[in-house]
Image (cartoon, rainbow, N blue to C red; front, top):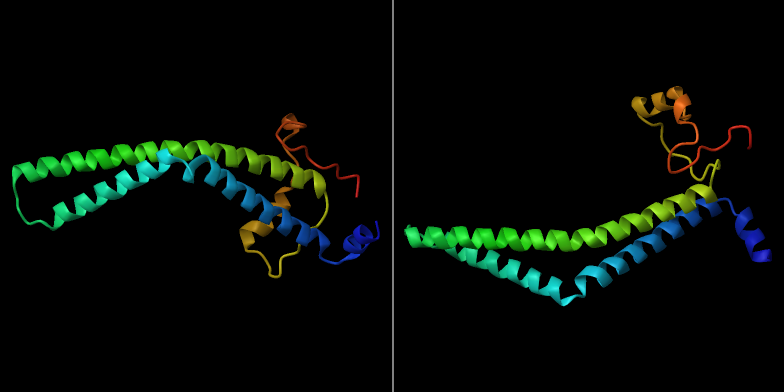
Length: 158
C-alpha cells in the first residue's frame, strides 16, 4: 500500500503508466504476430517461395535474351509471385485482426483508467488546426448522446 501511495504521488506516474502499458501491449502484439504468423511452416514456405520467385525474376531481367519463351516464363513467374504475395497478405491479415482487437481492448482500458485526467502536457504550442479543435468542443452531436464505443466523460465530475 505504501508503494502505491509513493507511485501515485510521483509527478509522472500517470505518464509512466501509459508508457508501460503501451510497451507491454507492443510486446503482446508482437508475440501474437509471431505465434500466429512467423513461427508457422506455411509462412516460412510462402516466404521462401516469394524469395525464390523474386531471385528468378531478377536473373531473368538480367538476361538480355529477347525470346518469346523467356517472356512467357517471366510472366508466369510474376503471376506466381503475385499469388504467393496474396496468400502471404491473407495470412498476415488474420494476425492483424487479432492485434486490432487487443488494441481496442487496451484503448478501452486506458480510457476507463484515465478518464478526465491530464496524463501529459505537450512541450510545444500545437499548430493552428489543432488549436481550433478545442473551439469546436469535444461533445458528440445531440442525437448521438451515449452512442459509440467509448462513453463521453461527465464534465460535471472533476
